[in-house]
Length: 252
Image (cartoon, rainbow, N blue to C red; front, side):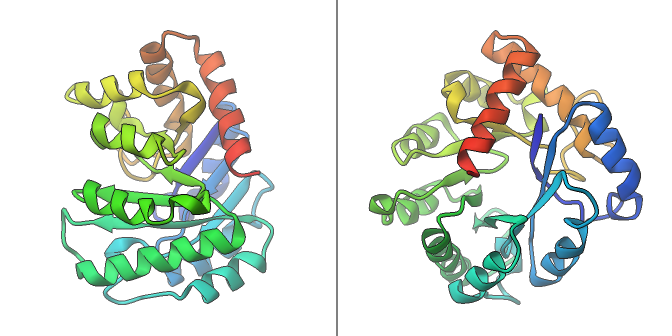
């Protein structure tokens, strides 16, 4: 089992990292991918990935941070190439829900990350909220580049998912699929091909039922895996094997 998206550099995970790692291993997690959201975040991640062989990282700037930071594709590529345990580009994308950052700056940053993904042939970890059309249009501009697209914590519409499948995208399910009011999202994941699905926690955010409202951690992924297995009408062990293979294929 692999948690394809967590934030180990955020509290309360960072200060309890040895126990977080132990609990992850106890539920059968083999890899943790801890995701960069800013340059400060990335500096912490470079230290965290040395704490255990199961931990890998990414380099990128979250769309919320783009008012203060725009990283060039060259800088992303440089940081990516310096460490073999940095295996992805992001978290990048567009978030027009909160408008924490200027739209044009978000779009510029997104394009810089895409260019870095093309140059490194590394997966692009994408955050998209209230920006389906804009996100798709930008990605579609690069459709001849065979981008390795991973839609993190996917909560988009089925129509959006269908369009992204045409770009060979992968989709990661978070604890949100365990929420009672997520019926539409559950139907979307029923529709998505098993070979295109990964699982994640996005911890310390979005704890799945029955831990909703608590601080999330990677070991809680077990609940998300069980819910997704139920939706796909397979066993949890089958779901874990398939999503693990999908991750390893995408990040190969």
